[in-house]
Length: 634
Figure 1 (spheres, rainbow, N blue to C red):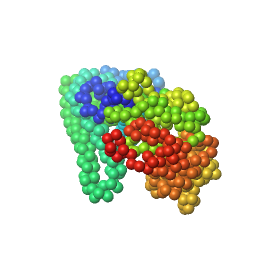
Figure 2: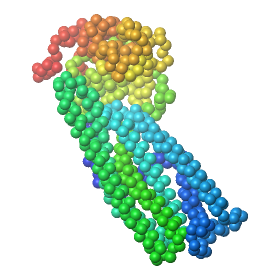
Figure 3: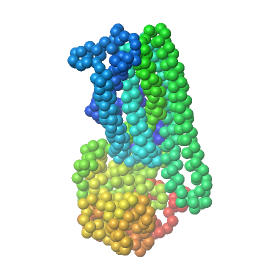
């Protein structure tokens, strides 16, 4: 919770320079991802492992069947006597009562190939389902954690970073998951083929295995460097996303000021930095793969010469060993490439996990008691909404609210007025339960332990009843958000079961019925991205109708009529004074239309309640320029 003693900002923790990559950090990230995959789909992962084993076994037996095949067709003039593999195949055939002929060996080879192909197809489909499901699950959990986090905590995150994480980073997590699964496939198949090779020539296989391990160890520093590049790429991609967001948000201003070229150049520099990281990763991966390919070919040539000259291998054994090692060679290169790809993608997974855990630690406890599938009951405000000794700071050394206390009678309209920066919007967020009071200011009695509170008919607003309170309030901001959908859909978002009669009643009370009726498709007219196809005043009236449709106990308007002309604003003000069911209205306003019909006005200055009264009592002060204690205009 924000206070004077502010912790390290959340974004600063994520934007810190990358730590030096070590074998432990690389292993830890891969192990965490592995555990997450297994926990996500334990049965599917077990089935995938079974299919991997089947593929490996059929692959191994298929290779082994080449030995009797070569003897049968007479390509090997040496006797098979003494070859353990040939003898094992002969004993198995005798046990089954099958004659080892060209037809039976070829049929066996064909059956094994069919089984291997079928299991490989099933395995790929299963791994794809696991990967895509894991991406969706990761994104859903991140969204849920963000939705549950306290509002003041979300304010510590840059919006573009959150959007980048739930889109680009999660897609890279999918790549990391796919690469990890491919690593498992390649590793198991390589082990199976090494086992076959060991049954033919343990000495040669041992040399190959030792050489391969040395090669992988030699390239491990490159893998660690790839991880560092992955961290830099994650930050660069976040920069692209932030620049894209800022570019779109500031494009109108840039065009108006003739500064489009500078706007584009800044974006181009951000893109260039990200592309450089990607090119470095591609260059390193390609160079490593080329070096491994050359090294493994040289080793293969040397091993065949060694096996023929010193290991006394038969022609059949040499052919099979050459086949096995020719297949293992690209596998070793693939393993290294997959390891580098995984190291490059893991930082995105770790960043997303850190963000999700950060949100979860700041979760509102009331969410667990009242999940979306089981909404909390509403609270009927009957007597008054009271604020007692509330202070709040955003951690910038100043207090947005400074020991504020006031009473808001139920069923009445209260207007909160005052200059910009007086704390009006912060007070609105306190009333909505989005923010909670910070600890008391130094110098106040019991400052160390005292926290202000909001009382609903005498009952403190806490996380225990927060969900129920939010079911009972409606909020209309100065800059309303509308979905890129129809007017009907935007209204029904607040109350899906509302009838057309109720929709039109809400539009009438917000003085929006006439302009909606005049639209070509009426309620089914699309409003554009964030309502961009409507004027500012039309957007505000639709947002106000949406709020009214909730039939709230408390209707809070934060400059919700600022874009309306004076005549329309007066119509809205009169309509708000006659809301049914005794709704309580709290309106933040600068203009006088709402003040003139309000039951009471709360005048705020510098985070404090300066005065409370009616329009008649406060009109002289509200009409005159406000001045602070040093004579500066507020």
